[in-house]
Length: 512
Image 1 (tube, rainbow, N blue to C red):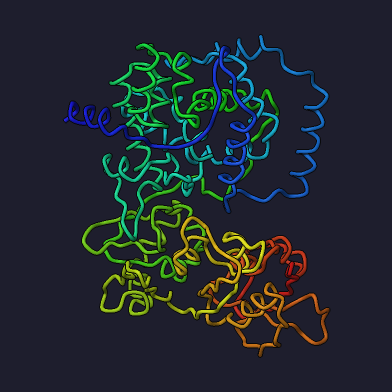
Image 2 (image 1 turned 90 degrees about the vertical axis):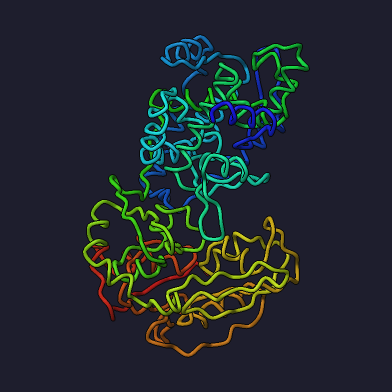
């Protein structure tokens, strides 16, 4: 079996990820290549669970940056010594290309780096367990920093998905299930195990970690061709110019990422808090289950469930013929187990009529099943609109917006009419948002107990929201662009975020 896998790797030239640019002392990197990497880094770390900077965070960040400006540039000799001190089977050379990426991580993109330091506290133990089980260097845990900036939902232009950036066929070959409901390339645990297997197979081929990293990025076929065209040289820097352009900076970026994490404190870089729990656990689900059923019965925010379970594409755990895992905070798994049967029964017919999964057919007509409890509204695309921004206005996921409207690769055109499914109880609110962004007059909507309304005696810039069962400040704030938990607490003199009750009226000042 092992021999068969190695032959397949040679012949198919499989690749896991796509990214980066640059190289050794006798090769040159271009500004365009490095800027492409910067743009990718910026987009990948835009995650909800990375906490927005508070006033104190911003003051501290300003102080740190000011301190950095006063420090002379670090001599190359220091970089060389620090890299030499990394105790690993992987070789860490220093050259101008490595230095450029080190400066990117430690100087130009400090905020993203601190966000990733925070995320690493959750993800690195998962990576280390998979690597250790296969006796691989633990420093390979820094590979997803380059691949996805530790974003399990990262999707490259070439179609590589997940925190380890697997292409579809490579993921399937290494046992990752991908279908209409689940994409295990986005499952940090299973994808880490598959990546460790792939890296182990590549090392059996090359016996050199730099070549392994290059092959992970662009596939063994491309690396083999580069070796042949370089007269059989089996050194990354010797075959540098024979490699695909996007792969040339991959090894320098990996070396720099390792350096940045190892020596973060020396550069005054500190982990930013994230919303992940300290400890998580898994419960096995035996029946089809929707995230809304879980959220409504446990008061766990649905976004929290999504982020701990990124492999489920439609908020559905499709446990019809097999068991599927649900990851929650440790204490939440205990609560879930105590009321599991009640959660399964809650609104079951709404989500699973006759206890069956409802699969939207894939056809030219692109039939869509409306999510339960929602109504469709229409929005006409105007100049300057992008998918992510529109999704944010209507508090929906960009992936859902693309699915509902059969949008490929985020391409939309001016004048295109989009259908957006919003909660029926807040349809008037979102119709007003649609009208406002399309430059149309906003019609006054009748107030209902479940929606936010403007009071005639209040400042017109404020609205009132009536708390419903299952609400919390985080879910309420998400319904209003530019509003945070802290904004609601400040306007309503709330000192304890957990002390809100159904029927309570909250004053809110939306940004739009």
